[in-house]
Image 1: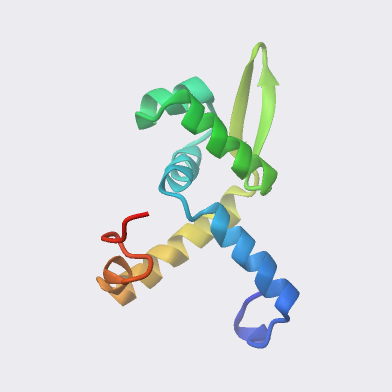
Image 2 (image 1 turned 60 degrees about the horizontal axis):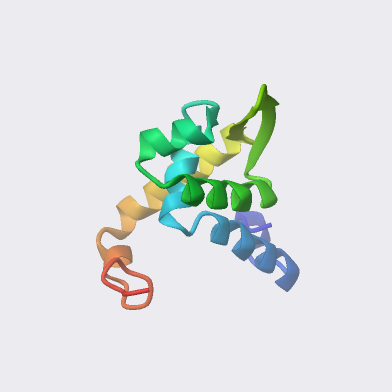
Length: 119
């Protein structure tokens, strides 16, 4: 994977890393992940807490589940979602916050991916 010890990670490792970051690249998915860091939630809970449509939450949870970022378990008729690897996920989010703090407004102002770019 990508780290200080493997600065010359192979193409396959970089491709997998890009897939991981794609899992976190959508604002709704990132919001869901941040909320799941607080604990397990049902789709209805996430919909209510985050103000997102049920279909949006379900679609993004399916993506996060397919990527192995979240897990799901049945509780009666409901499905309960949780982070699959909470400590590693929180470490990644904390590292992102540190990097964002170091880059200042550069990320938000990026002409390719910044907040002003229409998608």
